[in-house]
Each structure stands twice: as C-alpha cells, then as structure tokens.
Image 1 (tube, rainbow, N blue to C red):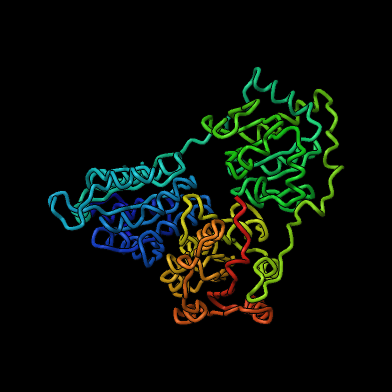
Image 2: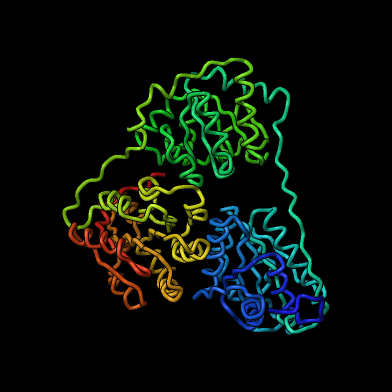
Length: 542
C-alpha cells in the first residue's frame, strides 16, 4: 500500500489514490496506452480490484450495473479515440437510466494534433448526453477527479473525465480532495396544490397507487398510505419488485399488467403516482389515465406532465408526502375507499398461460418452469429483444435493486456485460441473464469468457428463435417474406462450452428438465439455450 502522506507523484498515481480516497475499491476497464499505468497502480498499490473487459463499451456497462445494484457510482476506464467511441451506446444507456458513473477516458497528447487516434472527445461525449470533465493539469488531478465523482452522484448520469496521455507521468504534489454531496429531502409544499391533492385522494372510491424508480426508498410509507386508503399498489418497470409479498400488489402497471390488474387499473378513479415518469408503456399511451384524477409526486419538477398532465402535482419527497397524506386523512377522519376488499388477490398477478409449440420448446411454459427453478435470491438481468417483455412479466425479483434492465436506449447486446457487473456488485448472489440470440452474438460472445475467467455464478437463458424477432414479426404483419431476419446460428450451448463454461441445448421437455437440474448443480457460468419457434414467441407488450 502506498504511503498516504502528501507527496510529489505522477498523475496516474494521483488519480488512483484519489479513487481510493473516495472509498472506491472496484474499477472496470480495458487497458490502453493512456490508462494502463492508472489501472496497474490502482490494483497493485491502492488495494483496488480491476475487472478487465473484452471490449470498452462492456466495461462501462459493467460499471452501470454495479452502480444500479450497489447504489454507488460505477467506475470504468478506457483509453482514447476508438476506445471512447466504442462506449457511446453504453454511455447513452447510462444517461437514459439515470445511473451515476465516472469514466476515466484517456485522450491523445495535445502536443500531437495528428495522432492517429485523435478525435474531439468532448463532442463525442456530448452526443451521448453524458457529462464531461477535463483533467486540466497534473496539479489539479485530485480536484478534477473529485468533481467528476461529485457530478456523477448529483446529476445521476455518467461523467467522463478526459485524461491527456502526456499528463500520466508528469509529476505534481498530491493533496487528497473530496466534495461532499449534500442530500436534503424535499418537504411537502403547503397551499392549494396540497389541498387539491388531498381532496382528490380523500374523495376517490377506487384509488390505485403507482410507484416508480424515484420512490424505491419509500416502500413502507407508500404501503402505509395504501392500507389506509384500501388501495392496490403497482410499480413501473424500473421499480419492479418494490411491493413483492403484498396481497394487493398488481406488479407492473400498464401494458405489462396481468389481465386482472389491467382491469383494476382501468376501473380506478384516481391514480396517485410517486416518482413515476408515466411512460407510454406505463399509461398504455394515455388510455389508462383517461377519466381518472392523477396526483403526481416527484422531486423533479420537469417530470410533471411530461407525458400525461396531472390534476395535482407536488414537487416533494415520496416518503414525507405519503406520511403527510396519511396524517391529513386521519385528521379529517376520511373513511377507507373499500376498493381492495372487492378484489381477489389470487387473480391479480396471473398472466395468460402459454400454448404448446409443435416443433420447439414452448417459451411461456419454459418461463413458468424457470421461475420456480431459478435461485430465489437472484439478480435478474434482461437483454433487449422480443423475448424480454414476457420475462419482465413472469420472472420475479425481490426488490428493484435486483432487477437490471438494459433497454433504456432500446439497444440489444448489452445484457451480458451488465450481468457481469451485477455479479461483481453482489458476489454472494447468483445472476440470471435472459438474452436473445441476436443480442448474444452482438455483445455476449466475448464477455461470456470474461464471466468464466471471473468464476461467476451466472446463469444465461438464451432465447434462440434463430431470428431478429421484432423485425421478423413486422414482415409477417405485412404478409412479406421474413427470411432476411432469420439466421442459421451456431449451437450456442457448444459455444459456451468452448468458452470455458457449461452449455445445455434444450429442444424439448426432457431437455428442459435436464437444464433445470443443471441449475441446481451449477458450479460456474451456465448457458441454457432454448430453441424457440420464431412464430411462437409472443409479441412484445408495448
């Protein structure tokens, strides 16, 4: 371990020490000539862990999942030029997902403007929506790093710290530097907006409470309000699992709801939304909000009315507001709505059963069996593709932090790197990834071996319909030949074995039973390839 006293040291050592000073012990990355000494010093002298990825974008994705699961800023590092451009999709995913991350990106030497890998890196980062911080000089390294970490936490998005390669061995005095994040809870406002909100809630006969990603720390308070009102509860996709175990949990609100839950929401006369962006999929393009009073609570004023205009809006903390509502309902002696006693809890989370496939594995039936066989303490990660919405509906998680969605930017191929990051964040828990064949070919092949090298407890369920499913269905809808969307992939189970893991091919019920047994006896990364009929996989529920 390095001597912690103030010293004159190279910039790469100052940056590594700065990470250590912030309590950061894990960094994801891929080494190049602008960041290799930083990564080496962080691991050898600062006691940190460097997790090497096979591709630069994967390192950022790993750090994003790490941030989601731990609640701490993710840290990644890459070199310059093409290394940074390889991160553009991952950075955009992090921006859309509102995840704090610092990417320490090398830059070409300023003294060499004709460097082969030179590019306007500020412009590249700006296109993704991420923040940008420039390492100004060796003397400011600790302060520039501290500001990047502070911004990532406050702005809840990735921030790129741009590091010129010619600074790395330049020496300057190192002085530890850290910026506090002052997090104060917003209080419930007084006045007409509060009175209107309480009046709408008090007069509702069929209220439903909706919680989104901005309310995941308010479970107890929201449930107290729900029980006071006798209102069922539901979540957006990002908050999936928040109310797990509650008898009147509708699970996901909107196009992903069960038929019974959708019917309950449709009959509601008031929606009380905490920290929910009210996306088109949540509101079923506004249909589920028609004819209802909408009370919206969010700490972000710009979230109000972004898609559906509320009848009452409070820029306030979810926990304090829920408690405040209960207080005033009690003060006014408002009777409960009587809505939940009308509902059958056993039907609320029952999805439509699957149908038998004549030629391949029945996808929905396989999901139902996997839901029972997969470890209950799992972290669930989903890649993008037509298969994903059924997974979101039918595979449960114990809380929102255990559910990693990689579809904020609508990309495929991001799932396996994020599954690895989730496994690093929670090494004592198994990670389950659902991926499609196209997504695995795009972003899973190289990183599956990374999971093998890291000896991770990872189960990959590869949904192989030998097609780009979302495009396949569009051709069929127009009575056109879908063959351009179909592929003769290799056997992915064999590929998994060649990459050092275990692979099982499932083509029938007997094969599925063998795969379920393998889940129970796994001792490393396991890939289960489900051979599916592209005409049998349900449409996306969007």
